[in-house]
Length: 138
Image (cartoon, rainbow, N blue to C red):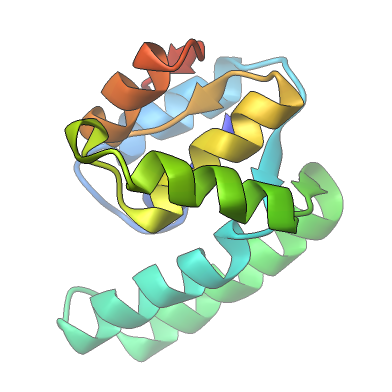
């Protein structure tokens, strides 16, 4: 299963969906993966939360350290290649899909790996389903 950045953020930073995400992670038995794109996207999300004063710098640093450890010990990191970017660009070029670039990359990574995607993003989930992906929303 491919974890979208929204799920990781909610797992490591207290948010409204955090309890649902923690329960889902505790009950999941499938191998978990992330796209390599998730690494900078997670850092960007944490930085935005610090800038917006949603979390402190210390909480952001602690979440970043926990994420790095989790990558090493629990997650398979799928590389993002040129073909992913080209296919994501094609998806983003379809206005009716209403996709942001990062979400398109996540969807393409799941499509190319033929694996379900786990997200908290309703628009991303809708588009992923339209494109034939299995989607789980904790």
